[in-house]
Length: 196
Image (cartoon, rainbow, N blue to C red; front, side, top):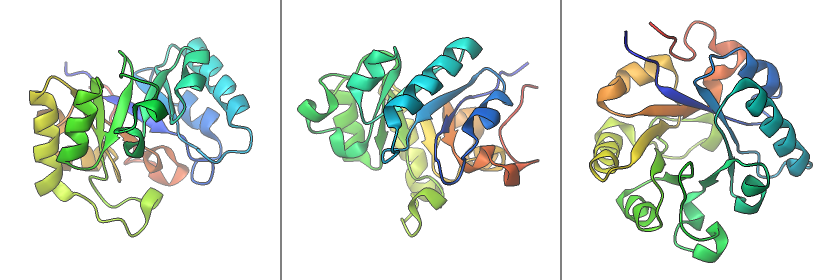
């Protein structure tokens, strides 16, 4: 039996206000990344998310704030703008950390910075960055392949759900994916991949 991909739900207070219910409804192999950079009570939200992920045995990471991630024993997710600035990202990537990359230069920067996991984005059009040009398959697949050849775990991000995962090529293309919309009420029937 093939296992389901490691999937991460990225938090978004606008698109997924009831993150707790959405996450709890998912299998345990689905982790959580606190994204919501502008949240008014981000430190409190991080504490709530960390506690729930511990109780449920889920992977948890915090984007853009290594200090907050360390405080909660979480992975650190490095936004692409921090990749070339060690002072901003807090030094080298550690096991459990990840980085967002959009092109080959950023992929190389992530590798040089010690990140072992990367999220290649945006693979498809996404509501998170309306108007942003997606990589599409012809640019995303070479980046995913290059990451894996370089010994990194590669995730697809941007417009991802079960249907897009199949379109991408599944495990032949990536180690898993991250998503926001795949967990919303409107995603019924085409959300995340289940075991089987």
